[in-house]
Length: 365
Image (cartoon, rainbow, N blue to C red; front, side, top):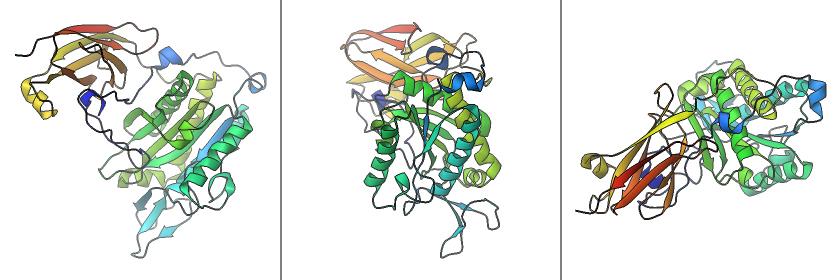
């Protein structure tokens, strides 16, 4: 985990899964880049005037054909508007591939009248490029090749999540080495989706997914809800909920493109970082040998004093090593620091924002 950052594992589509623990590892973590630093909102103008400037959008409904994706269970008799599936035990199932395609079609219908040209990587219950499913690698390659060959301006992949734990909520992913443009796109989409469907905000996260790694344009992957959670699955079964999800993705794309200000309140700017060494009990619980290092806590707040969640921080350790961390739901980031005397510095890693804190690391006893 990132410098012993206490984080959750991504779900079904979060391969390669949890990062291995390591006290001083160079680990990449979830990065939520603030919209105020990366997304410039412009005045609303007419769709005809903007049409030539709008990016074309490759819409990627995840899974398809023999690849069902995640599977959820819903109560018998639930009206979904999707193909029905029942297992041998009579349980009514909801397939991710069907949900993704439905949301994608609704998204395309939302974008078209606003002047966007769209490309679907599949339009039926098939693999990428509307081909029969053969393998995951062929499927993913076909989706990427289609978007790249068409010269799409943006790539948005639609998925639903799954986890062994009772997780719920919305996640959005970018490639680990993503450009600022991809991060701005992901953030705009994520905020708009969360604002419309109302599930827990699990943040914008980094991942190495094939479709994010190999697309040549700004790309994001949305995990709208958890099919493994009965409550989320029941919501995904509802056509109006899928419509709100599609409109959220569309509004995020439009906001990124500067077509409209959707009225979503932007995150406040971080103004204060505090840095303190955790106690020995907390250090031991984090799996750190007290003879080799300590657990430090960096807390981030805005101008009102409220904690700020998912903000990337850059730590400079006494040994000169740089470590990336990100604030959790309580506005704190946990950092393993080697027991070497010197200065520890933690700063907000957002362009244009200069907020930092410093602490002195004591010598080994």
